[in-house]
Image 1 (cartoon, chains in turn purple, brown, yellow, orange):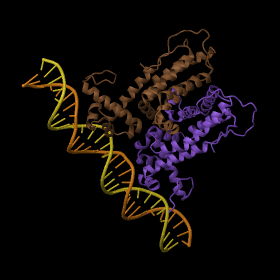
Image 2 (spheres, chains in turn red, cyan, purple, orange; image 1 turned 45 degrees about the horizontal axis):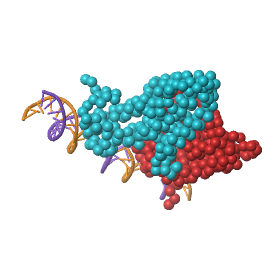
Image 3 (cartoon, helix red, strand yellow; image 1 turned 120 degrees about the horizontal axis):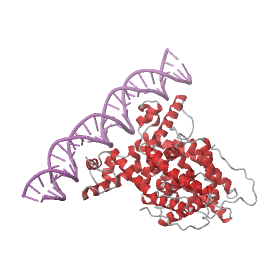
Image 4 (cartoon, rainbow over the protein chains, first blue to last red; image 1 turned 30 degrees about the horizontal axis):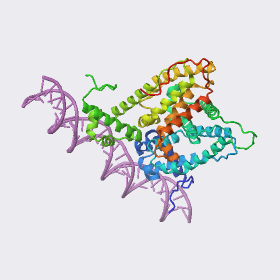
Length: 228
Length: 228
DNA sequence: TTGATTCTTGACCATGTGGTCAGCTTTGGC
DNA sequence: GCCAAAGCTGACCACATGGTCAAGAATCAA
């Protein structure tokens, strides 16, 4: 009776795995572009190179497909949200935070836009996640930021607004890609562009929040810039 | 042969004006929530308290209605984009910039989300605007920022990334409202919240970009915080 | 080869879609 | 009070939607 189970097992034959991959990739594009309602199973099927019936055969329904994509995106998100402690170097933590979020926008632009579209529509499927898991995560980081402020390692800014600042300014380069490209006149953002933007954002945040290097340069081995 | 003309004249009787207002308001909500494709004329009509035929009678078609909303939003945007010169005080200009963009998110959240949804979908209707008018606007501001940097009034940051930073971090509070409320556990953001966020963003940007007060405190009377 | 499981897909269905239209009522200037 | 213009709207249309299903095709272990 065990259903497919949305976790990342690779049960099922090679055919299933291949087709599901194609469907998920196509669906992420289409949902990201048109939102849940605006996306059609027909278009997803075409982009996946399969008949519509086949998509429904693998995914059950449009809704299940959508939920599965959201869950996949949240897994990626969670993989990025590593833990921090008040003993870490604020500058390093913030820098790594910005960098990994920027990398997420870079690696999974469709997923980022899918997520944005869900939030834009009032987060009908994600409300629980936002006010549960994610909220807890934010609160725990906020506590660390506050302690840093108390120790004089940074200005006493509201940690939640700071987290939102980092999220929004990095997410921007996925969600508003069309605007960024239109205004800069580029065809695409290069790796160098992304690196420069990352450095710019890091600098503004760290300097803007008055982050200081800890007195005793405690050598803790963090800086997990990569995502996995 | 003069058509209704999308500019903000108030031609037409009182009935027309009232109904169009209701339709535009309802349509902005629905398009913002579900995107262009996902929105249905039926739902817009219901939210406006009119039969579907009546909506089509006034607006012609779904597409025309959508375009009209985008144009209205761009008018609001343009009304906000006042001019600046290299003689102005950088801190004041940036502060006013952040404040007015924040006010836009506050006053027209649906419009902001409508705009976001359009960009998210690849800006099929706005590409021209983005790579034309808006691009010119950005370039002209960028030139001023660069001159400030040359005069040592601020750090030599890339002005375009700075503008995107301000846009994204302010727009966030309209577009990702659902996320902000879910995480902060609030029902809505109060005026005080908005004021604190505005001050926070202003502080981070100004401090983060090393903005200095001009040597001779030139008293120019700008700071147009209100939108009209 | 057998037989069960998985895969594939066109036909089909009820419902929703944007849009048209004809005929009605209301409005407002004269 | 007249009447043209404006407003109103239910009925209707062709088409797209998400989803079902049955019947066949491919796969694979025994």
